[in-house]
Length: 324
Length: 280
Image 1 (cartoon, chains in turn purple, yellow):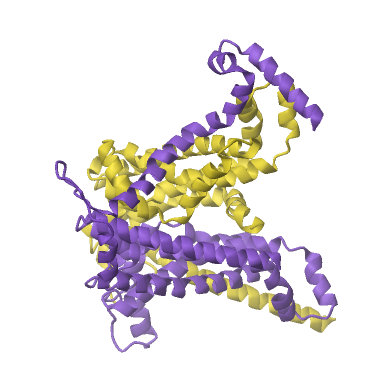
Image 2 (cartoon, one colour):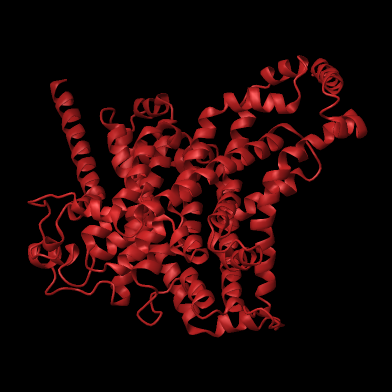
């Protein structure tokens, strides 16, 4: 360690000499030690500058806007109104409808994606031939654009002779008549969640498959030698090893489910009469249809607090699991 | 012995059947989209709907491409996605190098401020970003899209690249230092070439994100000249409500490049996705 430190000190002196004209400012004026100290900041500066302007500044601005009655038109002053926007959000019954729908979406999609993803990954893990082929097929919905799949599901579940209605009524005779899937609140929420599961399962499958394949063969063989059947091996040996990965996937899926927006925005637009809004779609409508930026900012800040709190809670839980 | 072998084969067969059934269910909506795009418009709202078009035609693809400035939107998406990818990957590689190889005051603060934005919903910032872009005169421009896409993708890219850089053996870098290489030389000649797989991973992620991004585009862009594909497709659907074949042909034109990129670079994809997960 000591020798390498010495070597690097020499190299700095050397480069300082060799590149004197180009690094005059840093090497010459500041001296080699200061130059060495400034190096990491020079590597960080360009990226962090863009990040600070377009992410951190807006983040601070979002907090400021939420305390104002924000005027969009130039020449009109925005007025500080304290917590009134937050009060308005909490008093608005539609906010609670949006929260209910978002929570229902999370409950409907997160466990389903985990169970299906784990199931498919375990099946794929047990085969060798065609594994990559199947993995690709299962992953296709994940890489397909949200806009495209939202429009696709809108078509499949259209109220007239759409694919879903045709299959369920004309072919399988499960339904007495055609259903206006996206016109009724419960069925619309169901279709939105179904899209979420269909599009998301491939992602958790991929993570679980990689985790399963990193388990050494000996672990399973040892369990089988000890007389454990395949089911027992799975529940007593494999699942506990996967524990941290399952929790990791859960944290990201919960964050993702609270971010649901495009599918709602494009399939129902939050309607009928705001009854299928989720938090982000309602925020967006308030901000860009009704131009109430203060209300929108307050709503999205509350959502951010909710997500960060949920994530921290899950991460604490996750940490404890890892220690076991 | 024979019985055990038979049981194993039977179990294998069941596994393959289950996988095949699931794969059919998964791809069915996409196949339906392809089938619809291949039908002439007259046949689309037929009852009973036919899954396999009897007279497949490419007319929808030709119409989708030639009508409605589709080539322009495709070009816009390409420019925006490529610029975002090149700049974001370069800047985040530099940042990741600083985080992976230096100890400096404020390191944790800077790194955690990046991670913080990974947790909050991206759309939460749409209101202040809209105001910022308005003040900087970036609304309704491709530059406005690119700046926000770069800023959004930096955090995840830096996180993935830092993890990768930290695993690189230091010996080569130390040897280069002895030879008198400065950090810029070490970074460009040693770290970057050694990290091609990781750089490819984040490049693919960034490209797909910028290619598919919709909410910010629909908020910031107004004029036809600056629209990207996802926006164009969404508006296309509103404008051609009943011409589903046309809408899906346009959609397929937009998603085929993505699927090709995915299939070609699959192994990078898988590695990148699992970097954080398996270590966690």
